[in-house]
Length: 150
Image: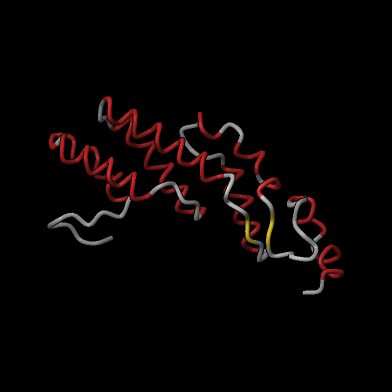
């Protein structure tokens, strides 16, 4: 696509993605979707606006720079893991599952191996809580002995 045709074809997306480069229209900087993330670390789940912007960008063939999102997602997941380390409850597992699935849906890295290691340590150290941890284990892609691979 020629640079001069980009702004004429994509007037609406250019407003939504103001930092999209006319010379490289398939890439948008993190600043164009950063405002959606400002309160995310304190939230139980990612703001719905983040998914809307991401899906709209994909439908337009744009690639969002997720560099700004990674530390926030890692912080959200880390806080959830810290809460689980204190006490494993369904009320603490559910928001963490939502965060992990949200990060995967967006394609944003959150430290999968580190997260899996911490969850596996909880799994090993708290066998009585395995049923409670099962949704998180599934969201992280574990294939435990005797369980089908999702």
